[in-house]
Image (cartoon, rainbow, N blue to C red; front, side, top):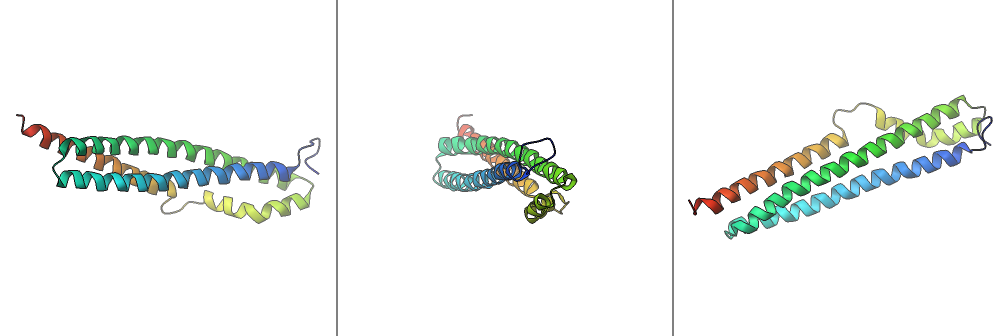
Length: 158
């Protein structure tokens, strides 16, 4: 079973692409969840170090928060690019199956393609936009904490 002139089974092709799609989505949400936990701990540590007047520690942690936010944003952009690329391939496989003479392949794909097509429909706010907002907020919180800690730390030396 497969396309004319091809020994590739459309189901196998689709399942491999769908497994990669699921992998990228899971990797993206897992890394974002880890970022939230790590950033929350860092914000708590920054708050505590400012309360205890440990300015060098708060300076380091604030700068680290900004760097971590920037790095995780970069990872999210990369993973989003891969999931978008994989989703486009899944839709191409679906379109190719619709042109094929194998209705059983089309029936098989119809069961799971609706979720993928749903992801391409425009929405008011997307997961990418929410992630970007969170990364920006933590980045600027880290920058603000760095500036505040540096001013407080070096104000006594002037």
